Amino acid sequence: MLQSATLAYIEDLTKNNNKPWFDENRRQFEEAKADFETLVKNIILSFGKVDPDIAPLEAKNCIFRQYRDVRFSKDKTPYKHHMGASFDRGGKKSGFAGYYLHIQPGNKSMAGGGIWMPEAAQLKKIRQEIDYGWEEFSSIISEPAFTKIYGALEEGAFKLSREPKGYDKENPAIEILKLKSVVAIQTLTDDELVSTALLKKVLAAFTALMPLIKFINRSLE
Image (cartoon, rainbow, N blue to C red; front, side):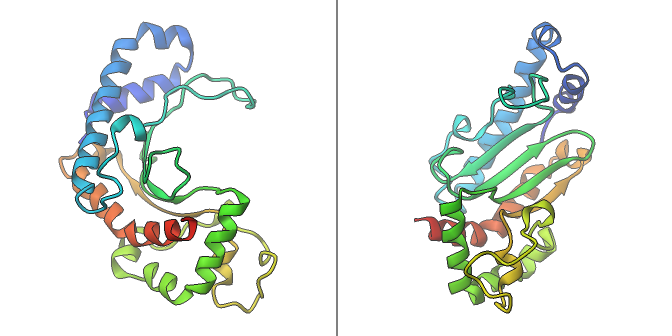
């Protein structure tokens, strides 16, 4: 579970997204950061027993910086309005698919994962693997444990309007092959974040996602 003070801090940071306020409240930031880091460590310890690829990770391999990269953004606010961690084989910069935890007050938090906007060469490999192994892939995203938690893969802005080059529109996998990201997400409420059942809920979400993660990473090896 997270402390309610951690959520309160993130809310305050969102409203006061500037360096003077951040510096004045650095102690609260350090406390919120430590609280989130404890949760991340507990996830690694527990989920590493389910997925051996996660066991070697350290919290620093997973947690994203609070500072935004504003170099190429019109939005110059310096800090993120959430805390996030990605549990990927080899660490968050490895390029492999993985599990993701996003903490954002206002019932905007989530657990899930997959692979987000991979490079063209990676996406080509993933699409080939889905095409060749459609029966296996289809069974993974149709598993009751998966559909109960995630429903289906995310689409929205992550999907092409037409079939990708080299694939027939009659391909049984075509709607999945149109995806530019392969991601599944379960939302988390603020009440769930401060509940003692949080770790159990995140572990269940990650466990249901594991076959998809393994399938994607197999295509990238």
